[in-house]
Image 1 (cartoon, helix red, strand yellow):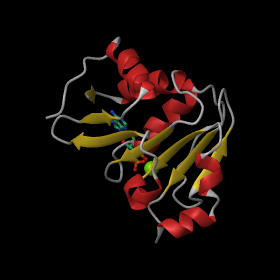
Image 2 (cartoon, protein in one colour):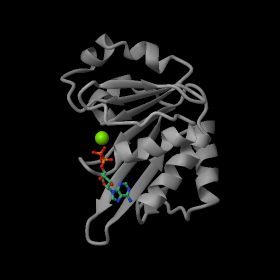
Image 3 (tube, helix red, strand yellow):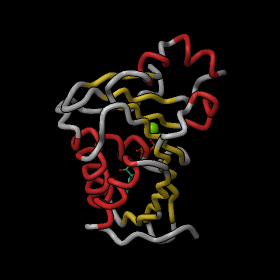
Length: 159
Ligand SMILES: Nc1ncnc2c1ncn2[C@@H]1O[C@H](COP(=O)(O)OP(=O)(O)O)[C@@H](O)[C@H]1O
Ligand SMILES: [Mg+2]
């Protein structure tokens, strides 16, 4: 499904709805160019998880932890050279924890992503200053998010 975010308020709403409906153990993969809005969306997902701390980009630390209704492990694979590097940072424990993992540039560690992950690809429409959020996944968690987002936003299928 594809949701259009016309502005920061929309992205904030989308993130909060996702965060409010996340279950323990969920993995969310975020793709999109630099500046697409991956970290911005994560900040709003964190609000939905009732995380009070300000979420900042994990580009340089690779993994940051926050606690809220569920723990959030916010990762950025951009600077990693290999999947092994992610493993060395304790990835296995995070992914198998009862928290939630959000991974920016997850395609860099494709082999380590569980099949049940929710994938969100953000693209920028520069001309109209909008973001398109292409959200995909399998299983119950995806169905719940789709249903809840559908109550507020109009959902389009794949282009
Ligand atoms: N609709 C929108 N959704 C998300 N970000 C937006 C939107 N409109 C403008 N922006 C801006 O785009 C930038 C996105 O940056 P960031 O979230 O750090 O991107 P990324 O993590 O993908 O590199 C921010 O400066 C944000 O304010
Ligand atoms: Mg980022």
